[in-house]
Amino acid sequence: MSNITFLTGSTGFIGAAVARLLIAKGHNLRVLTRANNDRRNIKGLDVEIIEGDLAKPESYSHALQDCNYLFHVAADYRIWVPDANAMHRVNVEGSRALMLAALDAGVERIVYTSSVATLGLHKNGTPATENTVSTVSDMVGIYKQSKFLAEAEVRKLITDEKLPAIIVNPSSPIGPRDIKPTPTGRIIVDSIKGRIPAYVDTGLNIVHVDDVANGHWLAFERGQIGQRYILGGENLSLCDILGIIAEIENRPAPRIKLPCKAILPLAFGMELAARLTGREPMISRDALSMAKNKMFFNSTKAELELGYSARPAREAIHDAINWFRAEGYCE
Image (tube, rainbow, N blue to C red; front, side):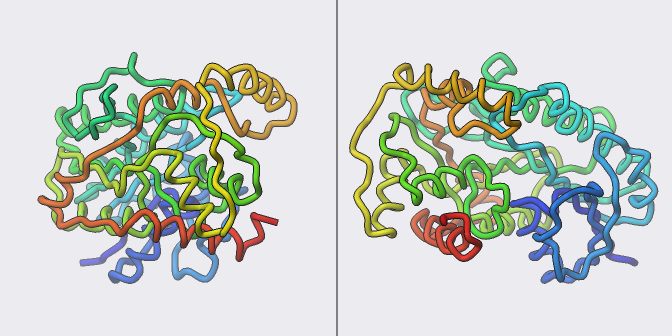
């Protein structure tokens, strides 16, 4: 039997880590990428490239026909976007179309990359689990809404059409090959460059991107169809994250704590500027709304059922800093 795996998102952050791990595990990779994508993350990798677009299933469905497995990692991951409909077409409609194409092709096993963004949060900061209740009305911003709706589509197909999919929910990954960089990666880069003189009282679950990739593999090997698994790391306040960065960089950490409402006018101004420049703002109103709750998560289910584990957040931050510096992001 052939061992061909179809992978989306290989040019992105998590997808590049998953691609390397799948190759190391002996999978023959067929990767979907848009014609104009930055392909630095797959340079030199032994992969078959299929040029196509998630929003246009006719561009890739032929390439799924002899594939055994599918890892759907691709997503439009931005906290602020000028066109919400474009994100919806990729994250929601694109995911559903891909799953239907996989069903039609007879793909045997699927790992779908969702996000902890789809989960509920506890106002008291208690780490959320896969069972923490959430609705689409709880989702702040178009990105969270789109990932919630996309996961709902996948879960419906699992129930109604017997889609052979396992769902993974990564938290906030950091590490090498964050070429965009992601919103979490930008925190590190901006902190190194001295652009974060103050902080708000929020928190994130920080995980090394390579641990997230390994979680994908474990879900593929051991996960139960229809189940979802949080792939997280260490829960840290933003103050602690900035403190670790400052310690590694041997510089003072920011000491000023500001309420979110104090930064709201700045976020509004940055969004106006972003509409003119096309560049994602450093701070957005949605990001501040998210920051009102600590985004803490519990990976116990993945640890017990999959054998998942994650290294300390400090190691992840250290690797991210080294990569950003080596690639010239901090100059």
